[in-house]
Length: 317
Image 1 (cartoon, rainbow, N blue to C red):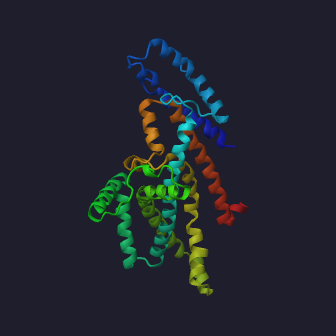
Image 2: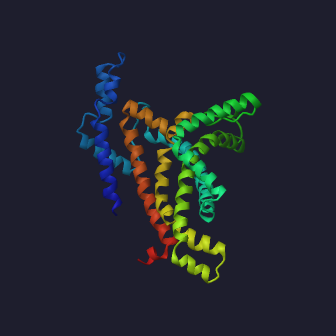
Image 3: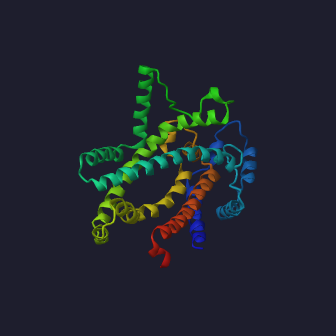
């Protein structure tokens, strides 16, 4: 039950920090000469901005618990109608990049631990350091330049921006799905490169530490096979910190793909949040961040359950 005070405290702090910013949405709207003072006063009443801030918070929290995320000031429509489609778009990138991250990162990390300082391990280390050192948005610009050059020289066209081709709006489900996948491929790979670098280095270090433990030497002395020692004993224990960090995956669904979405003009959550910050669209900012907080709490609960499944000592403690 600790998640309830955690959620209330975090949303309370967030709500008042957003409210503490100078001005509000109506302040910006008042600069429009076509908006009359009477219209501003009516909007202030409609959005409950004429009430004390703590009353606004309690009203927002009550509506949030009931599934009502509020109304967007700028779009004049329910927040969920804005966030829902954007959330799904960000989810596409996050799912593809997560599969690439753990599918490739774990293999590279395990290979580096089994053959440390080999040529393959050194090459992987160099690429990992490049991946960690280059910001994702800058690498995204390099990828766009490379794809444009490829198209000019070979005629091979890979979608660069947007979510889908306009010519395929009335296509079938599978054709549309394949078109979305092709558009999502480049930003997903860019998004995954940094995570592959960090996860591969992390699992390599963990595996090297675990494989130097006494119980691993004991398992080998008993004649257990190399694969069993590596994957059942060493990898299982080395992956515990990795499992503990899986809780951050769920809020990443809300957080979207960051500036990669902006560079590739992907209609995800990050462009919406940036616009909302510029417009001081209170309920879009607060409700989206509150959803991320809620998912972070749920993700940590799932991580604890997975840790108990991986490590029996946690289950019986």
